[in-house]
Image 1 (tube, helix red, strand yellow):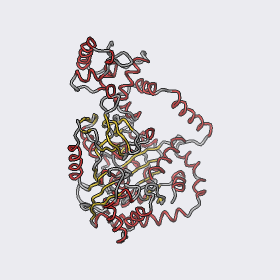
Image 2: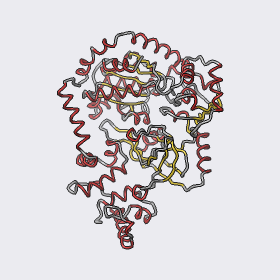
Image 3: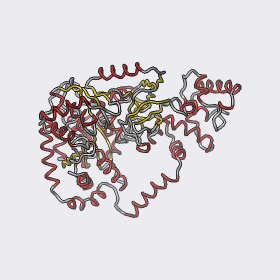
Length: 569
C-alpha cells in the first residue's frame, strides 16, 4: 500500500494498524495525519510505547497519558481512583483520536489496560471508549521488555483482547525510502519472509571488505562491547577532555527508567577529534537523529555560550552542538521528568537496541553474538544501502525473526492487500463527516482564520515575546523549555535579553537564590576592577567566561547569564 492510500484511510476515521518494513515511511505518514488533524482543530493524543519514541514524536508515553503508569493490572478500585483525577478525565474525554507509536514494544496486558481505562472514563462499551485508535510500528522490530521470559503469544500487542475489539484496518506500506539499492532491500525482505538464501548470506559476508569514505559506526549486540570500543578510541586521542553533566529534574523513580530509555548520556566526555552522533532532529539545521560528525573545536563563541562542541559533518558543514531537552509531560503539558544535555554521544560504537529509529550512512556490524530474533533485521535496516555495510560476524539467530511475528506479518500483508483493492474515493467521501464527529471543522472561514492566526504568531512575535507569554502564565523554566522545545539554558538567555528590552516584564520568579547571587556579584565586582576592554561583551557586561573561571567552573554559563539580569551591572 502507498502512503497516500494509508493517509486516506486514516482520514476516514478507521481504526488503523500502520506498518511496513523499516524505511517505508510510517513516521512520515503519521506526521502527515497529525498535521491534518491539527489544521482542522481535531483533538488528538500523540503517544508512544517508550520515552525516547515519545520524544521523537513530540508526544508523551501512552503509560502517562492513560494513567496506567507501571501497573501490570487494573482493579475496579484503580479505575475509580483514576476517574477522580480531573486533568486525566478531562483530557481523555476531550480526545477523539489516539495514536500509539512503536506498538511492537507495548505489552499486550498494557494495551488491554488502556482499553479498560478509556471505556471506564468515557462511560462507553465501545473499543477504546469510542476513540479512533491508530497503532503504528513493525513487529519485526525489538519486542516488549519483560521482567520474566515470556512466549511471544503472551506479550505481542496484537494478541490482546483490545486489539481484537478495535479490529484495526491494516495499512502495510510497501514503498522504500531508506534503502535505495535493491540488494539490501532484497535481503531485508528475505529476513522478513524467513527465506534468507545462500546468495544473500554471501552478499552480507562480502561486505566485510567494503571500504568507506567515512569511518563507520560500529554496532554490537552487547553493551560491554560498545563501552569498551568507545573508551579505547577516546583514550587514544591526544587532546584535552571537555565534560558535560546532564541537568535532571522531576520524579526520581520515573527519571531512572527514563534515563535508561535514552541514548543520550548523563556524563558526556568529548575530545577534539572524537567521532560523535547527533541524537535529536533539528530540521532547521538539517540534522537528524543519527547524523554523524567529528568534533573539530569547542566553538568560536565558547567565551559567551560555554565550551560547546563544534561538529564537522560529513558534508563539511560545521554545527555548534548546544544543549537540548528530553522530557515526559503529564496530561497538562507539565514535565514530570526533564533531561537536558548536549545532544551527542560517542559514535565509534553503539548497541543494536539503541540504533532503533536511526538512519546510518555507514556501519560496521558484528552480529556474531546476536541473542534474540530481530536484532539482525534492526541493525541492517539502519542503513540506506549495502555499500554502507561492513559485516564482521553473523550467527543464524541474527537473520531469523520471531515465528509468531512472521505468521502475523503474513496475515497483515493479506489484510492490507484486501483493503488496498477498494477505491480511494470510498474513503475520501468519509473525511468531512469524520472531522465533524471528531470535534473539528471543515468550515473554510474557520480554517482560514486558524491558519492566519498561526502565520501571524510565527511572523509577528519574536522569540523573546513568545517566552514572555509563558512568563506571564507563571510557568517555570523547565515548563517553558519543554513547551518551546528549547534548552533551559536558551530560556535563561532569553530572560537576560527580556530584562534589557522589556523592563516592565516581571521576571523575579526566575531569580537565582540569594547565596548564589551574592557569590556571582562578589566575583563580578572583583573582576570589573581589573578587567580589560576585551573582557566585555557588546552589552557592556563582563563576559560570562570571566566569572565562570573565577568560580572554578562550579556555576554554569547559563546560570551566570541569568544572574546578570538581576545584578546592577
